Length: 143
Ligand code: AMP
Image (cartoon, helix red, strand yellow):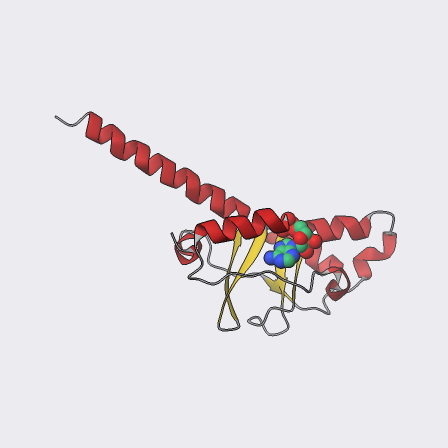
């Protein structure tokens, strides 16, 4: 299965990005409002400059009360691992497992076209298992 199918199956196709000069305070509001764990950092909405997750926020906030006024660029990860629409599910799973991160931007020809989270991958797996179970069930019980 290709990652484009996982992206197409998501409840929302919205790609949530934040500008590098936005504040951590803005980021916290964005993550909370959209009920997400990470945002792609981008100046123009299509080029990936970094990625920032709730984990980066927690690290920065720990023992640093002024952290909410810092810029997102100060806490983001600049060396972003990405995949393409045509990447396989297995490929993406191993990138996430090896990198120990839960979010992966999907980039085609330098343009951001989606984001997949470990939650999307798990949901896709459960849907697949349920589909196969239903197929087997109707095969076994056909008259
Ligand atoms: P996460 O597990 O996605 O919340 O992220 C854990 C850490 O990995 C944070 O420091 C993120 O900035 C970083 N991170 C998340 N996704 C990526 C990615 N695709 N490439 C590189 N770093 C990432």
